[in-house]
Image (cartoon, rainbow, N blue to C red; front, side, top):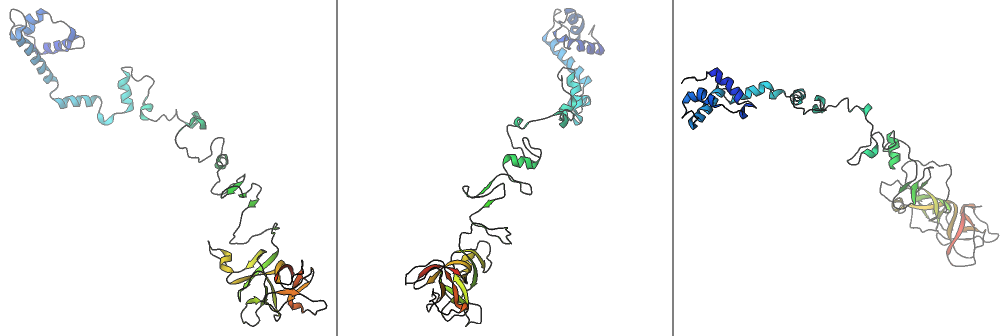
Length: 344
């Protein structure tokens, strides 16, 4: 095996021959004849397949000399860049050698951008946001506070604040509270006091109180205290009654008394079976019989609950005066005429 290359020479040769440029480098016939060919012997000075096989065998031996097994390859790679400690800075350093990190830095890879995204460097208009849900906590477009935001959106705050404009309730525009403080409702129920400087448009004619019912009565009946009972009860008055209370009214502009109702209960449905709405003041359509002239005193008749006009020069017990008629007619049958309650 004359002129064979030593192990060190083979190592040096392989580094050149199998480098990026070496793999495209021609092997001279002298290398085959005087060098590697002498290892296994050629045929007439030309390489044989056996020699090719031997070349690859030699390469395998060289590789095994430098890297013993696959784990050694992994250890070598990990030593260069341990997988447990990949950092943005290491990646940038490796890729920068190949010109792949132009304009990038470690902060960008870590997702920090602390300085670039500081509030002092960015300003966004509401029109920049075109999708998604944006909770309004401290105002909206052109709004510096939550109050301004609610006003811009036409919404009411759930606590405190001032709402301007008209607030409508139910359907249509009949029930509302205006910005000037005027309230318009069909009906109003209050569980506590109502304070008012003046009350207008109570177009009904009298002021009434619910009094304990002693019997069934109808609107227009003259009502008297039942003096035969030891309990407070009110019944239809007759010419024998001595304590006239008023007139059963269904035209009251104000009604007091009665029992309180629970939420959802109707006040009149609960109280009318137990109490009579008796007019104490004002003008009430009252049951009368016989001709009545305007201004006549109305006194008790022999018919329970029905009055009549006092006769000229007739003595009248003041306790039995119902009131005076504010309208009259010449009819004789029972009907209802408007009477001013307890007027003198």
